[in-house]
Length: 137
Image 1: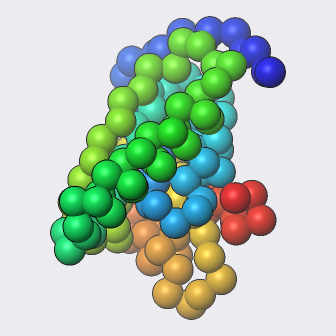
Image 2: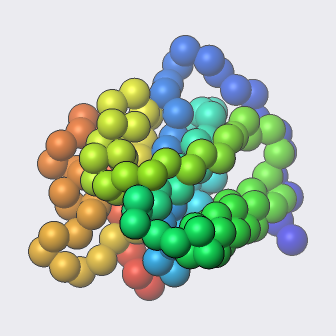
């Protein structure tokens, strides 16, 4: 098990690192990259799960459990990273673009499609967007 020393949070130097977690099999890889980025920057970490408004309560519960577990696993061995977990209902692109406006960095899963979520977001925001490749998942 890795052990990382605590890092001081430096308020005002950067915005939050936002991890856009979708229940698509890549949440843990995205969360791991986001944890490392938050530690590197000395920033807070926001795990944001985006769920479609049309999901059933059972699908929502499954998504909540999967993405929360992914975030907790990614944090194992790290100390001193202030973080929070949020669930937002809506369109992933619109939601993550809104959150990225005040973020130090946005971490999302990448795919190979021409309409990739990461590519769409990267063209709309000014903060760095890190697209975690499928292979990292």
